[in-house]
Length: 595
Image (cartoon, rainbow, N blue to C red; front, side):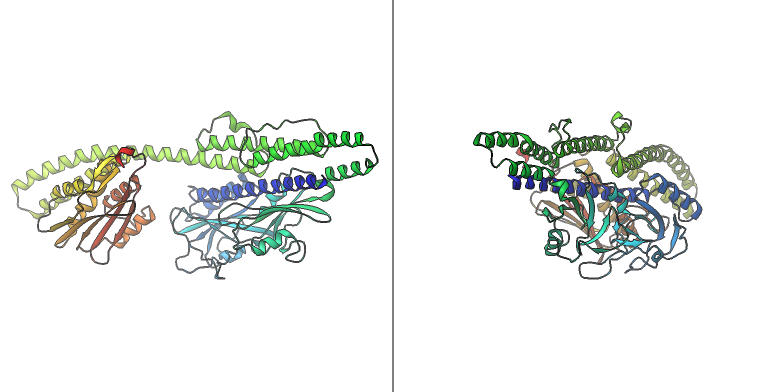
C-alpha cells in the first residue's frame, strides 16, 4: 500500500514538472512573437539612434523582468556570418558602435558542429541563441529582422528570473532547467550564475541518463524518480527548437509525508485484532488513498486539457489538503489564462475577462501580448483606410484625368505629326493600363473565393483569344479535360497577367501547357523573350518593395496575390526566356458529387 501511495506522489511531482514545461514553452514562443512584432515598431529607426534607443528603453521598462536588453544591429550583408562582427547601431545597454560580440551572445552550433549562421530568410523569421553567460547570468537571445531588411532587433533574456517564480504544487519544491544535450544545469531558482553538472557526475540521476541516451536532443522525455533525500519529476519543454528539460525537486520528507504516515500507522496496528485491521483498512482506503486517487484523476484531466473537471476547494489541512488546494488554484489559473487567450485571439480587447489580473510571468506576458496585438490591429485599420483612399484616387481621379489628357492629346495629334504627341498618347495608354490592372487586383482582393467546377481547357484558350499576338506564335498543350474546384473569376484574373506579359515580351513564340499533378494541375506559360529582371523576382520573393528594389508595375503582384488567394504555388524559370508555373489544387468544400 505504501508503494501505491509513493507511486501516486511520484506521478503528482511529474505532473507538476509537465505543467511548468508547458508554461515555459508558451512563454518562450510568446517572447519570439513579441520580438518579431517589436521589430516592426515605428519608433525603431536605425537612421535615428536617439529615437531608437528611447524606444528600446521604453519597451524594455514596460515588459517582463526576464527581458534585460534590446539591441538593433546591422544585418549581415555577406554569408556565412556567426553574428559577432555586425555593428550595434542602438542599444538599451549603451553598446552603440560596438560589434555584436560585445553582448557575449553565442548563436550555437549545428548538429555537425558548425557555427549557426546569423541569417534570415525573410523579415518574419526569428533566430534563437544557445544559452550563454552574460555578466554572471545564464541568458538566451532572440533575434528578428526589421521591415527594412537591413537591420535586426535582438532581445536578451534571463530565464532564471522566470524559473524562480515557477508555480509549485507542493511546499519546498525547487525548479531546475537542464540542457537537452549536456544535462548541465542552465536555469534554476537559487544559483543562476554557472554551468555545472546536475547532481555531480553526468549519469548519476535518471533524468541525466535519459538525456544522454535519447536518439536526438529534441526527443520528448518525462518521468519521475526517488532517491534517499528527494523526489524528482521531469519533463522536456514542448517547443520547437528548444531542448530544455524541466526538473521539479521535492524533499522526500515533504513529498512522501502521506506514505510515512501510513507506514507509521500500520506498524503500530500490527498487533490489533482482525476487526481492528478491517477498520484501519477501511479508514485508509476511504481516507488518503481515495483522496490521492481522486486528486490524481483530477490532475490527469487538467493535464489533458479537460477544464470541466470539478476540483472543490476544501478545508483539509494535511498534505492531501495542500495538494488539493494547489490543484484547485492551478486549474483556476489555467482557466483564466485560457479565457483571456481566447479573447485576445478574437481581438475582444474590451471584454471584462481581460480585467482579471494573472500573477507571475505568464500574466505579464499575456498583458504584453494584448498590448502588442491591440496596437498592431489598430495599425492595420489605419493602413486599410489609407489603401481605400489611394484606391479611390487611382480608380476615379486618375482615370478621369487620363481621359482628359488623352482627349486633348488626340486633338493635338490631328493637327501635327510631332512624335512627342504620340509619346504622350503611349504614356497615357500605359497609365490607363495600370489603372485597369489595379481595378482587377481590387476586385481580386475584395472578395472571398466562391469555388465552382472550372475546366482549364476552356479557360486557357478563352484567355488567349483576348490577347493580340501579332507576329508571335502561340501554341497550347492541353489534355482533353482538366477540371478544378476553384474560383473562376479569381483564376481568370490571375492568369491574365502572365499570358499578356508572355505575348508582349516574346521574340517569336509562346507556349501554354496544362499538366496533371498528384493533387491538381500545373499551368506553364513560356516565352522566348528577355526574361523577367532578377530585381523584380527578388521583390516578389521578399513580399515587399523598397526604393532600391521594386518592380515596374502591378503584373507580378496581380499574379502573386491571385495564386495566394487560390491556395496555389508559384515558381519561375528564367534561364532561357521566362516560364511561369502556377500549380493549383481543389479548394476546400468540394461536393462529393463533384469529385
